Length: 483
Ligand code: ADP
Image (tube, rainbow, N blue to C red; front, top):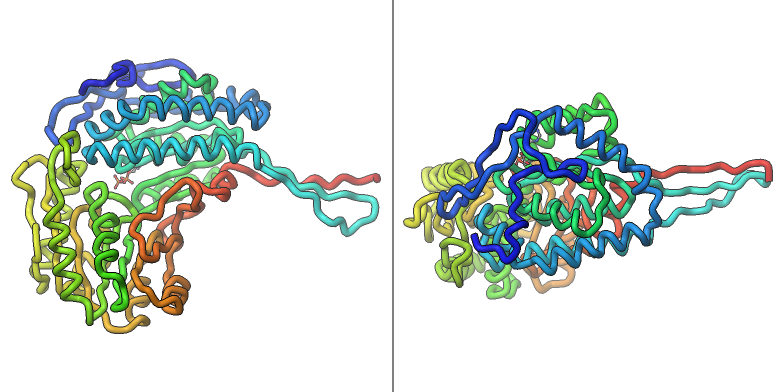
């Protein structure tokens, strides 16, 4: 890996402004999923180091919250500028540890940086209220204050943007943050910390602890200093964290699993629907929580869509993400491949028709062929479980009500997509879908300006947008008497 600035590859954790090894000296290896190459190690930290990071955050909190919003915004803006200036290195680091194609990695760096820029601006717009008083001699005032020390746990599929989407609003609101990145993609997180240090984020305000997910997570949840936990990852782990946070009644933001329906109605622009489905399904090799997971196609256009879609899928180029023209990298690890294999085998055993792909890719490692299966039904695992891989199952439906009922027949409710050109249908279906986000005639919906988050068991809270900073604020009501 040839970085323009090799000092961005950090193999130590960043706690209270210092780069540190684990107390016991243990490390954890990081590998390139495209080649199996050993990239380096991270400290295998646990409870004690996490506690110190939390205590350092608490010590740094009073000075950070006392800064004016404009002062905090200036620090965040400097961090944003450094992320953008080092975008090529950050993208290369990300592709090397995570596998996504370089162009996608570059896109994520820009997307991730946008949250720092956005919340630097939003910091200045944390407004309170004065309320009409029911008493002639008292005035009612509402202010918003930083909640306090925050902890974050982030996943490997967006090694940079899932961090900035949490740290941006926390720091903007006046809260320090202790982060545990995913163990397979820690270098993006540590590079971000190196840039935060250069940007002038004070020591203790942003720390990155690497190591044992269970130990670090348990301390983050149990420690009463931590007032809020924000997590992006699986619903199963989200449930554990929610339980662990119950004794100390922490505020929670959870961005959990999805099982996004992608509906193609018979009046859709089929070419646009194919393009949207490709973007939504195969981005990051199908490893995003908003990836189309169940594609429902109306009877009249089913075969036409299947044919066009399969032709487009066959044009995808699988390979090492650093190579030119590659559109699909490897999956994160072999466990991820086994899940896709299981979903494919189950669908084919129950009557699915394989249109393309279906196997591990000839490149070996954790590469998998972009796959399309037709004649999929509700008895198959793909109907209920998130595949998190490059498998597109095509279901058939007849009526709008049936499509909405099928789309909603899941415990998840993160993103949903549909294609139609009928304005009445667009309203009815948008309103009928139980999901936090709906893409109409588009397969890509995420940006820093829009609220990202789910309903049902897809989570709590919203990230990004003018609403995102609220997750890091508490409301204080002051009743001023004696007037
Ligand atoms: P994914 O399917 O994306 O790997 P996970 O929920 O397993 O989803 O992982 C998301 C993040 O949660 C990672 O940073 C991982 O290390 C962390 N994690 C996994 N298990 C636990 C746990 N028991 N406690 C705290 N964090 C955990």
